[in-house]
Image (cartoon, rainbow, N blue to C red; front, side, top):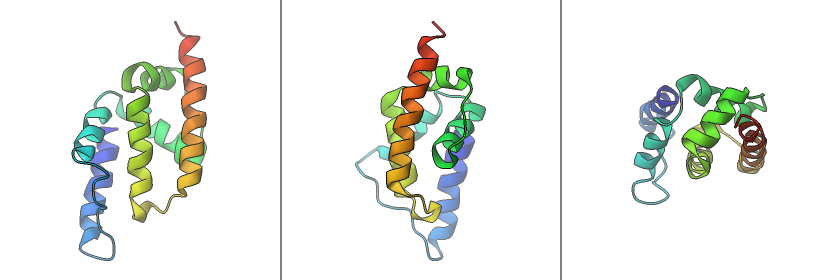
Length: 115
């Protein structure tokens, strides 16, 4: 997740010189918060969760456990806002938020069955 976040931010900075720019922070410290959240989950599960939200893919039980018990709901929601805020990704905000809620709810069920 750290690598994914870093590459996304780096890509945003590179294209800022062209036709894209990094959007302003929704609130002070937002990017720092997102970076800290990314450290609470493995890179593999981070990628899997992003793919689940953006590309409607499935998530393993282990990644659900990392999402729910490692990263948490606030971080998950912050990542949704982060991806929606990057215009170069061209994501549909309604889809991201709807799918993000589905992923979270499914993972809560999966993580609860792991206790």
